[in-house]
Length: 101
Image 1: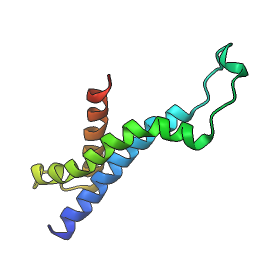
Image 2: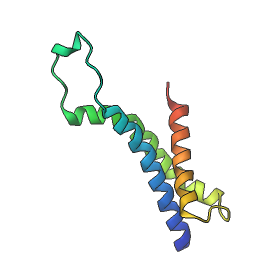
Image 3: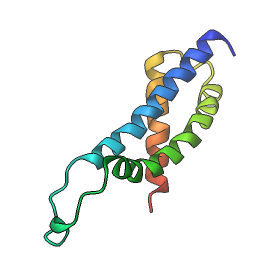
Image 4: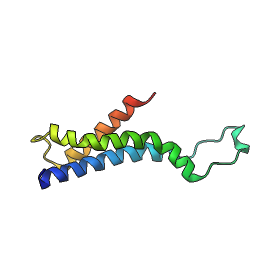
């Protein structure tokens, strides 16, 4: 693995991380309270964060391993850091959509 391959892999990883963070942050946006739930106490932030993040983190860890395959499979055609970033993002985003129940 050359320095260029490592750089492409790192940008692929950054794309995967962006794909993981976007739905987690979207899940943390405040939702309008339901009438019955308004009286219930809000769960602690870390519990809410982990409940939103867990499915994305699991898929993301798998994607980090397959990022190596992305760089290997596209060897010679993936030459730009922007393409690597988009390849990582697209891979993880697609995998998230396929694994949703």
